[in-house]
Length: 351
Ligand code: AR6
Image 1 (cartoon, rainbow, N blue to C red):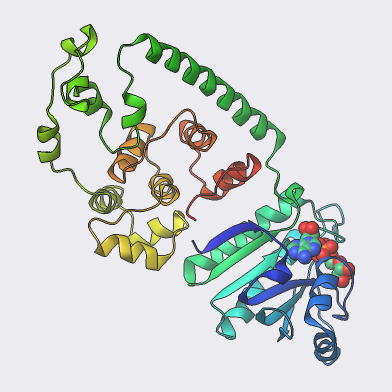
Image 2: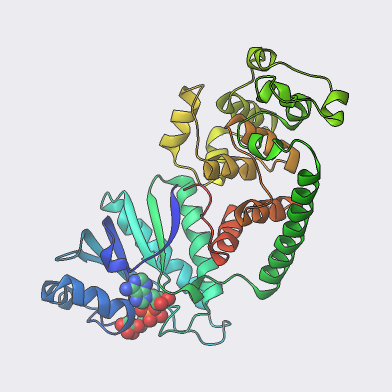
């Protein structure tokens, strides 16, 4: 996954370069700047003294010293002054210039803090959006692994309305789940929950009798007696399209290029090549969903693609319900989805 949003202390990350949210003197300060100088040791300050400072929106590079990274890229964010004073353009320039330096120094992995969002007062939600937009724009043209490091949870808050909407959606679905489980209890056979994750389609589930599942030892109920029965052997003979084949077919049907698809899914090119060359490749559930989102599949199409990878969307999982929420609302922005997943303490897509 080329862009990963993680919660961590940036000074602890092992990667080619970390970015410092510095001030124009480049001589250290508080916040992440102070933490980086402290962890790097005095060698960093000695090198910084020779740089002659740095203008807002620009970036300069030094060694990493005692840090577990080769380089530190120092950039100076804008001080927030109401938002109408070129703050956004300057912040964009910080990301652009830092990434340009990273590329010029052959870095394959870079970690950014949320520049300007602390002492300089840039509102965190907007700072996050600028960061994500700039980094994803850069990653369309270049191969690099970029970490966006959020230190405290409040840096990564989705809008209140979105949060409330999703929370209500989850509540509704949980009600549904409970009524489903009550229905299931009333039914004499409740295997669909078990089958949900096996890759057998819902139509197939309806067609499988409890006899097949239990070696014929169990008596058929009225319900199963009414549905056509498929033997396990029949099911196994039914050679299904694999996840990889389905994915490539869908990409063609949508008229997308491979790279547009894996980039939109925020999936690493190497991983995509593996999926492409191995017809039986089994992606993780989050990767499979990331592709469904990139392809802007409907809910049914998403479930179908997931099934081919052996997964299902369940209403007893918050993660799954959040995905369902975004698909139902036609919002296929993987980063917005990840922000929401993060807000609800769920795993992120594409990882
Ligand atoms: N790892 C990751 N993120 C961190 C860490 C850390 N160890 N520590 C803080 N943050 P700030 P600015 C987050 O204030 O707003 C300095 O004094 C923090 O939660 O470090 O660009 C400089 O010398 C926030 O979201 O940088 C300048 O004078 C983000 O890093 C001035 O502050 C940036 O907060 C620069 O202000």
